[in-house]
Image (cartoon, rainbow, N blue to C red; front, side, top):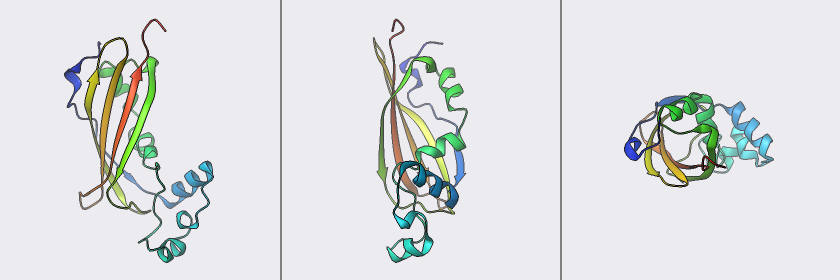
Length: 148
């Protein structure tokens, strides 16, 4: 299958993910984050949060846990995942996400550029249990030229 602009607007599989306190702790340990608000509800509340918040970029992990078939779905869209390079990740934080929340992710293809270098941009909106957007993420990928 060939990559074309026809996939612009195509929806990705939506999924839900439970935000777990232990996963926040593991993520923070992996990146060396030591701020106590990410480890202790008491410390988070002292800092003005309603619970343990997720640290910046944590929502990237949601896709790996909640949508592991993303690469298979990309191939069905004509994206040659063997040539895929991550180009960018951009987040707009609209409201805090806390441990214990259930988050729903809804994604779509928002742009495709074809030519020597092919570029695909995805947008995912993460919503809380009230169906209110919390985070909007844009991910751009580049497909290396076939001859490289």
